[in-house]
Length: 585
Ligand code: ARG
Image 1 (cartoon, rainbow, N blue to C red):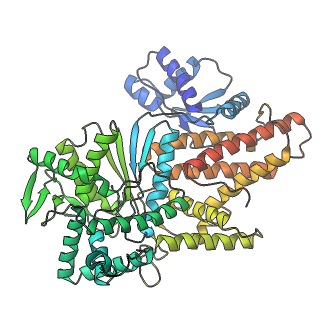
Image 2: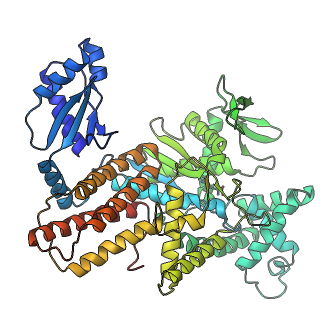
Image 3: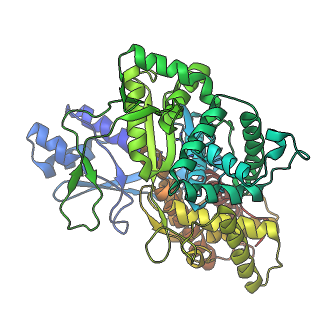
């Protein structure tokens, strides 16, 4: 809000001078020198051919008088801006009174977010950890900034894993009741699924015949043949219950609990559209759509920075029907877009928060949808690809024996480690509290990295109560709550006096602009940092000022309001990151 105010002042002056162009303002890169700066004179002068320094001075001289800022020109043509005492007071009180702490709504688009993406019948593993964390934060960010957001968990429930799991259960004699009517109806449990899928998945790689039969079973499920389909429904139910439990522990909430299978009615419709447009061809019995564009080569990821960039073949065709007529991952994604555009409608954007390694898949799906008109040309289809969560060895996070880690184990580890931490801080163990802190540690550790980058899962570091961590932010919010509870004083007019108070105001303003940066970058790492900076500015203030014992009523009331302002700004930011603030810690 301050930047806009300064930009308006500068632009009025620029207009008055008859100069063509606009000024923009940013936070100062030299905070000791000034609070804000504008470097726009460089480009403005280029247009008019005027002397840089002269033009900068002219603009500053032409400004309408204001009590909120001071302006100074620094050679060659920087305009340095400082908030005055009055300016600090004015903006602090404005922020304090604003329900949203000065965060503006900037978009009214309607967006569908596809995240979560757990697979039915397969145990949730660490690869499914980032999507709900990032997706939930983006959803909340978009909503705060004014958008209408619909979240869909898009379960993987229509693929080969269904056939593999059922066939394995059948071979292990667990499904006799359904096929020969022998014995009582079995109770399908999570343990049974957790055993059957990995077994079948490994077997399909070495046993051709088994793989072919699993394809067959999958097709039977997709064609809703009995008893295959009924068994599938039961498996799905058991799995979804478990998935819901884990996502709720992670604080991920979904408006829609749909899956690939829900788009089944749209598969044939989508394929008809694609065929009518003449986009499909048959290759080795499969139906494919060529999506490569002219001159396209696919870069092969470099193993080190100095390696020469190499390329592989153009984007391979999207396969929409298997040799046996079965649907594939791309087919269900295309059908789902058709379903969303038919049943929900007027979506400006559909965003997928999915592992970056699925990039090609989404390129294929999006291209087919655009070529076929399944996605209108003005609809944005976006894959927000996240990097890999690595272990301390820099390789994808695995168990010691090299197996992928189950999500459940990670959650238990978070609880256990956070519990130990609490104990060593003298706080009584409480599972809920340990979960809150452990999840916050995980989330902040994840979200404070740019979304596309790989990062190292370092739980000890993430769990520290000091430094750039989730628990530190929770702790700060708790501390403010407890001071305010003790204070028993109503707040009053805020008067900003010390440098520490100024820092708080500046950091709230920075935090506010970080929401827009996060929106633009589709990554909340900046927002995480700005939230930390505000918490840290508060700590510095708190360490240097006595609040509860302050003698002057007026000053004390001002402090209390400032604290309430910090709490509001912090809580708002933590709510976007989906980090809960515990009662005490
Ligand atoms: N189930 C998929 C997987 O485990 C992720 C789903 C992502 N969403 C999508 N619309 N494809 O890889």
